[in-house]
Amino acid sequence: MDAEELLKRYAAGERDFSGVDFSGAKLSGVDLRDINLSGAKLSKVDLSWANLSGANLSRANASAWGDMSGANLTGANLTEAYLLYCDMLGVNLENANTRGARLGSLESAFVRNTINPDGVFIEGPMTIE
Image 1 (cartoon, rainbow, N blue to C red):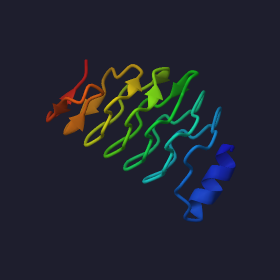
Image 2: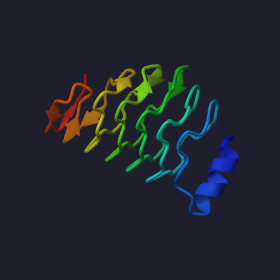
Image 3: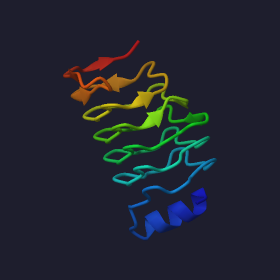
Image 4: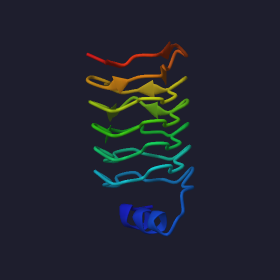
């Protein structure tokens, strides 16, 4: 599905896009609060500076380079997400669950009340150096 179709359906109130292939979509700076992207394919997706607060990204897969730098992932579920090749510079992971996730660079990421991939709870607040 391309970015235009996603935004049209999201604007119409649809939130469940689980398992959909968004490879290559350009979604920088868009507001996608509470979207369900569980199991979605996010290879080469640009979600930089997107608002993904409350999003479900569990088991989402970005097997090729993607950009989530500066994204707001407050309260997001990233359980078992494979985002190892995503640039996650400066993301906000406050109240997020990343248990079992494989994440890319988290340099300058903000964490507070966050569950790390290894299951450790970080009360924070702290910025990852």
